[in-house]
Amino acid sequence: MKAQLENIYNSAKSDISKAVSIAEIDDIRLKYLSRKGEFNSIKKGLKDLSDEEKRTVGAFANQITEELENLLKEKHDAFYQKEMNERLQKDRIDITLSGKYVPQGKVHPLTSTTDEIVSIFQNLGFSVVAPELSPEVETEYYNFDMLNVPKDHPARDVQDTFYVKDFAGVVLRSQTSGAQIHVMENQKPPIKVIAPGRVYRNENINARKNNFFHQIEGLYVDKNITFGDLKGVLNEFIRLYFGSARPTRFRSSFFPFTEPSAEVDVQCIMCQGKGCRTCSGTGWLEVLGCGMVDTNVLKGVGIDPDVYTGFAFGMGVERLAMLKYAIDDIRLFFNNDKRFLEQF
Ligand code: DAH
Image 1 (tube, rainbow, N blue to C red):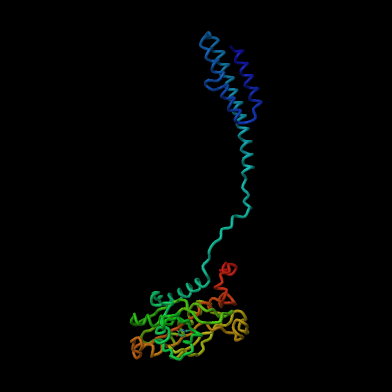
Image 2: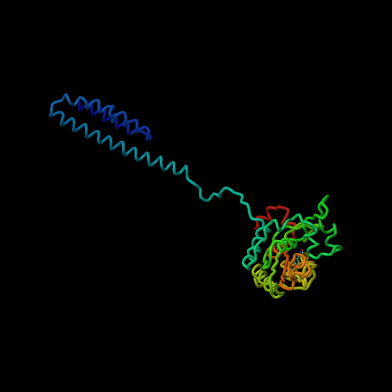
């Protein structure tokens, strides 16, 4: 019986030495050492032996079983290491490869500029008017009449303003100033509001002019509002929007709905004031109109000009964005060229 065990032991050892994979090692273990394996079937015969033989043959059986277990384990571990190393080599990740391009949308520069301006005025105590008080499709009544614009004013001409076909007196608003009237009709002073929005003009399109653009209207009506308040608020706005280093100037002007009226110019960023195509050689770009609300306008909406005064302003969003980011053509905002939009 001992000889039988030795035979099996030798054949198992030779099988193990020939094995080349974990799978083969597992098969060998099954063949020799499992419950139904060859060793077990021989060990069953132990019970028929004398006590003396049981002890020596049993001990021998245990010894070679243990030796085979150790050999199997050794081989198994070696193969496992080898297979693992091969897998690690094969599945290796190249962390220097560039990632997949995931296109990402951006906020349009006019939207971010509007948001920035709105937030500056909100910090100065202005609130944004409800959209229904600032419609893009307007009547001449709000766009011109109530703003003290004479019937024969050139701005009313079809060459300047878009009239809605088949609806007499309906226009695409040429300015956001109509929002002033809507607000004052709906609210008693103190009034301190801004109204951002799109306006339309019948322009020949070029680098400086588009047939629609964006404005932010402002209106502050209360007791004792002065031109000093107007200058204080607008200077503070310019300081916050451009930083204090940018030269600006207040220049007297005329608008039918304000008296006195002024315009604010900001030094041209393209030429640093030397004069170029963008600023028509003047070195300055006008960014807003403003003034003290005309008494005719206040009377029109039933506000007593002897009790209340106010100031108003209207600024061009495209101009302000162009001056901040050195953009020399207004059409870039509207032709959806990703090379331009992706820079913001
Ligand atoms: N509505 C004027 C324009 O489009 C700008 C403007 C000037 C608005 C003076 C105002 C103002 O509120 O007071 O050119």
